[in-house]
Amino acid sequence: MSNIINMILENQNKQKAENQQKFEANLPVLDANTVFVENSPMGIISKPSFAELFNSDREVLENLNEFVNLLNSQKKIQTSITPKLDRYFKEYFWISAKGVNGELSFKLPNFVGLSELLKAHINRTHIFKFNLEELYQEVSAA
Image (tube, rainbow, N blue to C red; front, side, top):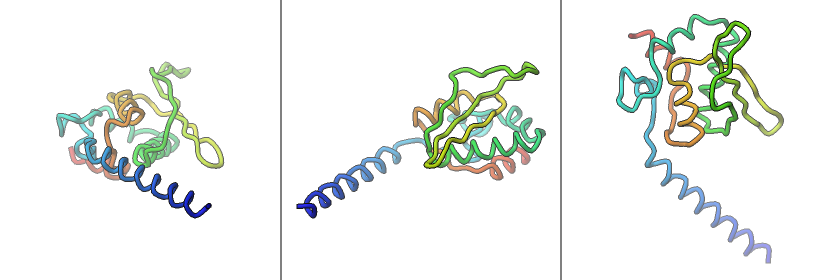
């Protein structure tokens, strides 16, 4: 009896995976080039605003790296719909992602296009295929 149940569940999982692949095949892909509005009409973030982040301290850079990794992994994140203000009146988003053994939370300074990037990730309207090094190289080349 359990063999048939296992077979049914295995078929369900295969069908889900196939449906997921079909869904993702129709989504636009943003790479380190096309994610920038200066390079592509489907771009989301601005090079000059994003480039300012590379003048930040280690904590901001590590948080930015973690955020980019979350985008690529397609993990669920939680954040506010609008940016918050810190004690220096600088805008930021608080990003949280749950893992198997805990929750990861960090502060990310706001930049032009971050809100749209968050919405694209949360609503799954794009596939993200870039890392921080590629973004840095693209911004530095400008």
